[in-house]
Length: 48
Image (cartoon, rainbow, N blue to C red):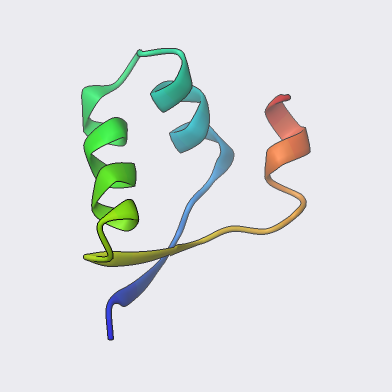
């Protein structure tokens, strides 16, 4: 089973705005199943 990692709002912001290639690579690892990214419903409204 993939390691669970918490994803904070800044990771999404930096990915979607193109600020951080590192954040984009991190989310791609989650998408590929290398990591199991978790977040809370409180994280998304913080920035959007």
